[in-house]
Amino acid sequence: MANEPNPTKEEKAAEKAAQDLADRAAKIASERAAVAACKALLEPLSMIQIDPPGYAPGGYSINRAGHQVKLTNGDIHRAVKCMEDPDCSLETAKKAMEAIAKLPNDFTVADQTAPLYAFPDGTGTQVTINNAQILAARKLIA
Image (cartoon, rainbow, N blue to C red; front, side, top):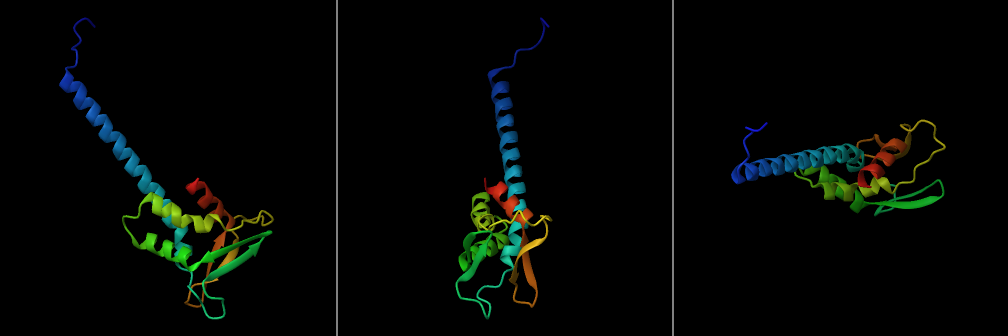
């Protein structure tokens, strides 16, 4: 122990710089993973048809479990923009996720993955959103 070398100022600075780079890389990786999780939840929202025939223009009015919310065309556009942007920031993804998080969940539905909401996608099929997706969106933006 008496012969252990003492690090020089340059070695200490290099070690600190290396640690700072490692911390930054970890933060970037964490943010990318969070954006990927957001995009997975935004996919169904981005597939919803805007102003389908037979619906009121401007979005979808939802009344469930005593709550009323509106899923707007702007909400859908934000989801589409995030999905199409390979460099979508975490802040942008979270902002788009607010549309899912504001949907009322329904705890009377035992199966959390059962569809709560079904929206037309413009191809003759339905896009569904369930309790699990709503709760995951709330958790991700918290």
